[in-house]
Image 1 (cartoon, helix red, strand yellow):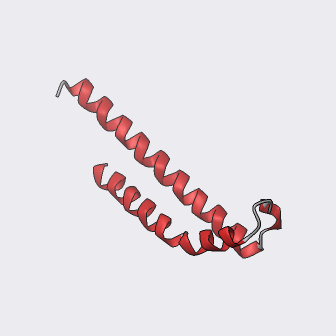
Image 2 (cartoon, rainbow, N blue to C red):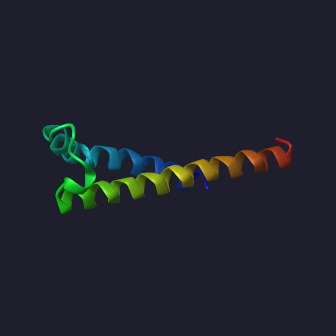
Length: 76
């Protein structure tokens, strides 16, 4: 399970690096631009990055919780 957690952390890092070009595009837009006014590709990219991030964070957190709970029950 620890290897899966480490894999999730690696995916999170790569996801953060891959979102940089989209963030540069967003910073170039006016501050009052709403999400619905963004281009379809940019919106899709942001939603995919959000989904990957949430899935990895929740997986890593749950694995950490399970690991610590199992250690407590085992008495180590």
